Length: 86
Image 1 (cartoon, rainbow, N blue to C red):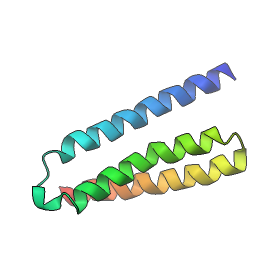
Image 2: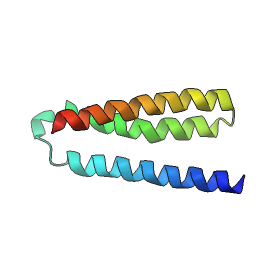
Image 3: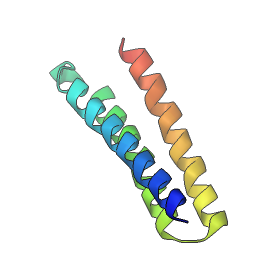
Image 4: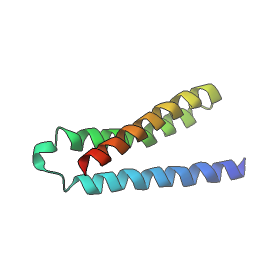
C-alpha cells in the first residue's frame, strides 16, 4: 500500500504542475479571451486534478474509476484547447 500512496502523491504533484503551467501560460492570453479560452482552459485543467482527488477520496474502486474517466476527459479537453491556442 505504501508504494501506491507514493504513486498517488507523485501523480498529484504532476497534475498540480500541469495546472500551474496552464495558469502561468494563460496569463499571456489576450484579455479579450478572459471569458473564453482562458477561462475554459483553466477550468478544464483544474478539473483534471479535482476529479482525481474527489474520486480517490471516496475510497471505492467503481466510484474512483468514474472520476478518473471524468478527469481523463478534462485532460483531453484541455489538450485540445492548448492545441487550438497555438
